[in-house]
Length: 70
Image 1 (cartoon, rainbow, N blue to C red):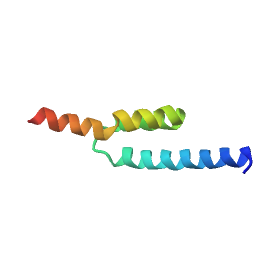
Image 2: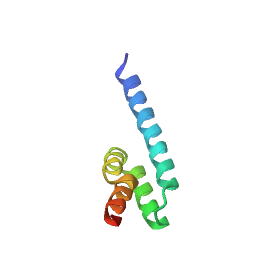
Image 3: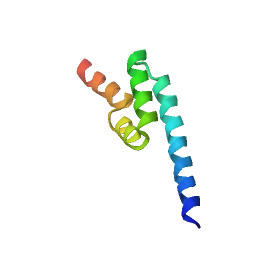
């Protein structure tokens, strides 16, 4: 396998992960401003944006809100 082919596969995987993340960001119940900031971050900084979203994204916020209600 050539190096160019490997980079194309990596890029395709990153693009698919970005689409998946954006789909979940749009479907979240957060305010529109927060959604737009996440989308901009994920699109313009793909790898750090995806990693940070996976760590601190909508699921983390929902979990924290549930803990505060108890």
